[in-house]
Image 1 (cartoon, rainbow, N blue to C red):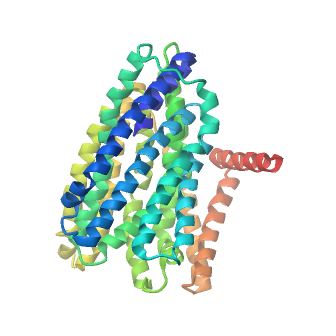
Image 2 (tube, rainbow, N blue to C red):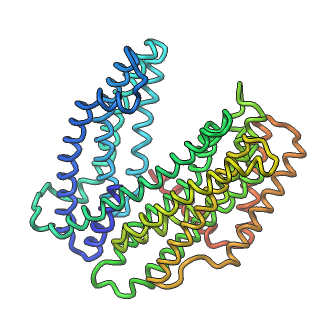
Amino acid sequence: MLSASFIPVYSRLLGEGDEETADLLAWAVGAIMALAIAIFVLLGVYAAPWMIDAIAPGFHGAKRELTIRLVQILFPGAGLLVMSAWCLGVLNSHHRFFASYAAPVGWNLVIIGALAWYGPRVTQDRLAVDAAWASVAGSILQILLQLPQMIPLMGRIRLRFGRVRAALRQVLRNFIPVVMGRGVAQISGYVDNVLASLLPTGAVAAINYAQILYILPVSLFGLSVAAAELPSMSRLTAAGNDGVAERLRERLNSGVKQIAFMIVPSCAAFILIGDRIVALLFQSGEFTRRDSVYVWATVAGLSLGMLAGSRARLYISAFYALSDARTPFRYGLIRVTLTFILGYLCAIPLPPALGLAPRWGVVGLTASAGVVSWIEYGMLRRELNRRIGWTGIDWRYLARLWAMALAAGAAAIATWRVVGSHGRIAALAVIFVFGVVYLGLAAIARDPEFDRLLNYARGRLSSTSRD
């Protein structure tokens, strides 16, 4: 949230060649954040007992005391993670992406290491405390991993708030609508879980499993492109840059094609062979074949809006680059409202009306969320097209991607029927065939996005070998 309000202003100054003011702005934002976070952490630690009483009034005795202690430990870690977002904003604005997105791996490794070391030696309550302290240590490591690249980009520490008053005011002015806009997205997920709780047992779990699968391609191929394009698009809007609208359209359309090339096969895979993917990851013990089919149907519903949702994040980045955080927030409110209305109708009254068991309302819930994603994307695209001209993707290219993905799905299904097994090896074979056929067809078609992916992979391999 901070990066979405800070990166456009900071990148714009860099694009104008005013590196001194950009450095001063970065240090000013960092200082204000550090002060605000320190106050926030102190208040959180002090007010933890009252927050637990409000959030979890049913907790008493030892459970309440343990929860309070965990919250008091985790609050400083949360503050450090916010400071890590400041580091990310600086690095991304200079087109340094690896350290900022690899650093969270260090955070996870510290927690995993603590669980592996202390797990066999202590009680569950003590393990929870140890894991909380490990989270704080991981937060520190996440910052330390970014500092070696970040500090040389900013020079020595200088605080001159007067010099950057206008830029700082713009960052703070954008921060509130960005927070509210991102909060709206979180509320949308909360609404899904609330509605799922009205369905028979298992619906909430199915939603959670489906969201784990859904967020993987969206993060890898959607959010990553949006994050990478935000500083580049922000630099295009710098004062003195000619043809801003045309160049912004070029970057946006290029990003849309990148997203579509990988999101389309992801959608097709979840819809056509989703049960194999679910079985590979989750099916064991109490998680049966019946559960795999249930989660498959749930994630297939979410997949209907995967392409729209991924492209919407890129359009939101374009609005942020144009210093407009209010339009995405306004359309986000419409999204939440429609998610609740359509979600309720499709999840609760619709299944009985169609003669289906109530448990299948979860599919109506996720499918309606997919429909709403297309509505939000359509509104964002229409508004941006009004400002900078036509943006999007040629329908013929999109049709070719779907044809390749459907052909890959057909080959994967044929493989499944030949193998005739529900085991993990068979699932791996099915998924492997899907990927090979899709990429093979892209290579035969000489798809430019495939060539770009191949060149990137070659570049990474060659740099690794040189190291």
